Amino acid sequence: MGPVRTSALLDRVQRETLRYFTDFAHPACGMARERSGTPDMMDTVTTGGTGFGVMAMIAGAARGFIARGEAAERIALICGFLERLPRYRGAFAHWINGNSGETVAFSARDDGGDIVETAFLMMGLLTAREYVKSSEPALAQRIDALWHAVDWAGYCPTPNAMMWHWSPRHDFALALQLRGWHEALVAFVLGAGSPTHPIDVSTYQEGWKNSPSFRNGRVYHRIRLPLGPELGGPLFFAHYSFMGLDPRGLCEGGIDYFAQNRAQARINRTHCIANPGGFAGYGAAWGLTSCDGPTGYEAFSPSHDRGVIAPTAALASMPYLPDASLAALRHFDDYEGGALWGPHGFFDAFSQQAGWIAPSHLAINQGPIVAMIENHRSGLLWRLFMSAPEVQTGLSRLGFTCSSGNVA
Image 1: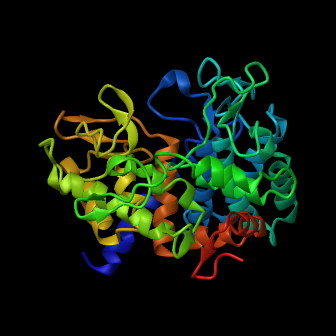
Image 2: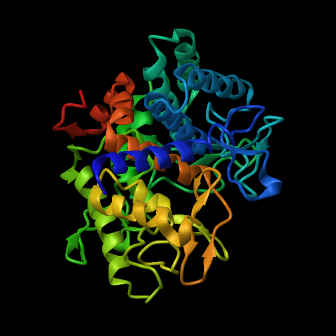
C-alpha cells in the first residue's frame, strides 16, 4: 500500500471514529456516551471517555474533519455541563446521567468521585486548554477553574496512598488503592502537578511503585518486560495515560516508558502470532485488551485470551509498532468485506473463532484510536499536553526526565 493510500486509510479511520464523539455525543451535554448498542444506557455518559473524546476532537480539528470553531463549541458545551454537576472533593463520578446531571452509580459503593476517570477527563481538558488558550481565552479560563477544583490530596487518606474512589456515603469503603502497573499513571502526574491540591511525592514512590505488579523484568517471547503483570496485561495500559503523556524518552527509576509500552505491544502481538489457543484468524488480526466479548465485557490479555480481538488494541499501538499496526488496520478494513465498520468507526471487537462481531462501540476504546494514531502521525496531542506547565511540574516532582526535552 503506497503512502497516499495509507494516509487516506488513516484519515478514514480517524474521521469515522471521531463521529462517536460528535454525531453520537449526548445531545444535551455534549459528553461521550458510555457505549452504543445498549438502548437503556443512551443517557449514561462517561467521564474518562469524554476526556478521550475531547482529545479526539482536537485531532479532528487539526485534520480538518471538523471545524476548529465547532470543536471549541463542543468543548464549551461539555464544560458548561461539568460546571453544574455534583463533585466529590472536586472530582467527578465515573458515570453521569447526560440529561439530569445526576451521578449514576458504577457499583453499589462507587456512587461518588472517581479520581482516575477524572484524571482522564483533565488530561483531555488540559490538552484542550493548550489548544484554545490563544483563540478562546474564556474557555481556557473555564477549564482552569474545573482543573483547579480537583482535590487530588483528598483522595489520599494517608500521604503515601491514593484511592481510586471516594463517596460521601461510603467514604473510602471500596479500599481500592492505586498501585502500579496499569493505566493510572497520569493521575499521579496531574496530582503532583496540581497548583491547588497537590499530592505528596510519597503517594507515587511508596504507593504506586511499591506494588508486586509494578516491576516485572521477566522475558516473554524473547522480549523483556520492565513493568506490569504476567505477559503484560490488557494493552490499554500502554494507551490511556499515554494519549497525553509523551513516552518518547520519558524515564524514571531506570524505566524507559516508550520501551515499556513497545515491549508490551510486542508481547501482545507475538502472543497472537504464536496463538497458543489455536484461535481462528490470529496473526493477521492481533490485539488483546478490555472490550466487549460474546459473553460480555472482559479484560482480555495474553494471560486471559478467549479469541476476541479489539481493533483499538492494535490501532492505538501505532506509535509503538507502526508497521504491525498498519498491517492490522488493513486487515480490519478488509475483514469479511468491511463487516467491522460500524456507524462510528470499527465495532468494538470481534471473534472469528466464534463467528461474532460486537454490535457496539465503547467511548474508552474509540478515543484512543483517534488520539494515538494522531500521535503517531504528528505528535500533536503529546506536544499540547506536555506543554502544560502543570504537567511538567508533576513529572519533575515525581522524578521523571525526558531526553526529548519535553520535561522541565
